[in-house]
Length: 523
Length: 38
Image (cartoon, rainbow over all chains, first blue to last red; front, top):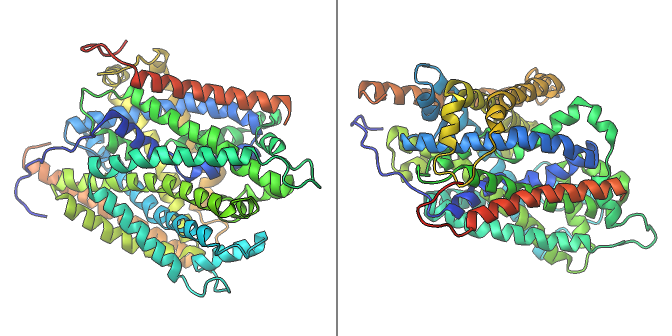
């Protein structure tokens, strides 16, 4: 990295308003919409789960979405696309706040590393669905054996090594890097403009197929699609008295909207002050909800119920991997045109994964471009080299609990901490008056005034409640390594050291960048 | 599916489609030049 004074290059911009909405919606619509939400709703009160879900959506999800869009556009106007710079401009009297912003680069990198590998399984399975590779697997045990063989967890009659999985990983990795290399407009925006409508089309085709399944087995008349929808939607009022159900709903809303990652900050930074953020944020969030509640809620659970009945559906709904790679392939291959629907299913999930994973690359690239004036080519190369090495730990350490560690720190812990910090920063440090004004610059809608109160008081404290409740119920146990098998302990600890090293390295880059800015009088 | 299930499903779909429809309508409706916001 040269020591010449930085000459900021012209900022990239989105080509159209629809492009940025689809890119943010693409980032939000992921595997969780089709796999996590239905299982979560079914086991947490069915229809009654939607009461805490909507409370969380309106008090936590939408406000946080607006906060991130507004902060991103604000930061972009000052030449910052990532959280360290944006946090620093919002609270420039605090020397340390930029280091909280490191989470907004670290989190996306960590999620990208394991998410891309899982995404590559979907590409592989699209081909397996087409050539009928798993058609000999007619029960859950053999389908699981096929999956374990593919992932290299076991060597069996289906796969003798991890080579096939590695091949599809390489294709997926290069595809992701290639799309982002093309830039915001030519890469991310162009792909999302095609992938998102296609994803919705595939989901609608599959939903129509599932909802017209009727009663697949005449000998079991109760195992039908209507009762399958009932399995998901029949309300269990007693669930509303359980705090963990409210916590689960808040967590689901938080994770599904892709808030607290740093991606929306970066995407919104490529907007100008003539671009709306209030309506665009609402559009992206509502598109995600359509994909999750209407389409996602009408796929796996009713299909699994119609073929396997209530007892097995309860069991398979516990694991999103089982739903995607074991249950659905079995269901789909029992239908007419099973291969075709199998391809559509895995293609749907692959597109959902791809539009999310490309969004995870951009914060790190933007940081290197903005703060070190690296060319996009160099930034992408550096990102690809680091993440490729880190992914090897996930690929070869899958059975040792490495992916779970990546998911815990990058995909859960960092999100909630980051969301809480940015909500307080926006509403309390920057100030709700200025924040409200920023939010409404060039706005195409007027957000109801009671949201001022919600953004200042409800959302930050709701987030603290989610953070505290999550640490209490699950987080502390994971942090303290409870339940980790002794054989996995070295791998889990090794992963933590690796992740800590990555965090320190990014914090070091932030330190170097700010020291240079101070020397050049640009802070 | 019970009556409660139908009510929750249809009410949830209605809220989400309402939000989605509203945001689509406001995004794509023709605007008079020079005017922004409400």
